[in-house]
Image (cartoon, rainbow, N blue to C red; front, top):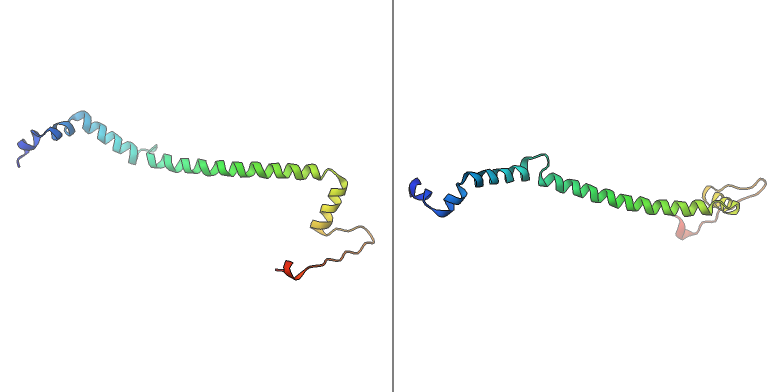
Length: 105
């Protein structure tokens, strides 16, 4: 098959058009090589989704902390928290910590 015969084919006329060649090369450039390529956009979209999940997590944590802080405005709750978490005691008071076998690591 000669080049003359190939030039006469319909698909070669369509794909051999200057506009189509420019369009194809532009599409390949934009998808693979450009700084704003499809793959970079895909990666950035994944990063955005991960950050939005973190945002939702931190919003729920903030709400939990707000409830905790509202609860800590009461002096009895502060005392209870200090005794349970930090094992604080009043002066002249003895504290005994009882651990069950199933609670020891």
